Length: 138
Image (cartoon, rainbow, N blue to C red):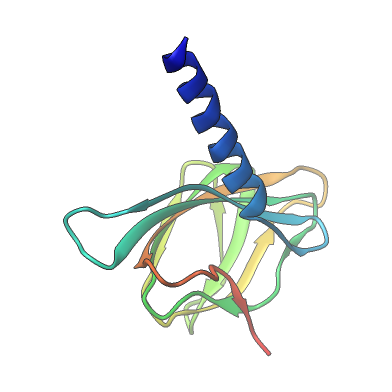
């Protein structure tokens, strides 16, 4: 019985963390931290997995990420229009991916469809102390 109680407590704690880590960044756009773990072999660094969900026609305002962040992003569903730094805007479809280096400026991140939702998973390697994942331009 004690093992079951511990599992339930762990599940509740995980659920509470995910709810607290959920952020609406723009109308129709939602960011949820789905994994956050310190890297045992890299002191001061963590890996965070972030689910980004865009409703039809939705997107994020122009933004940056923490200056320590290296990011791997993969489209899970639909298609995402993306523009990082001076690179041309590109549409990534489900199964396609890109990376962002520390200090990159993510100028466009938008659902490519006005009728279907889109989702992407972004994996961050970031300083453990960095709490904000998306930093909108001022």
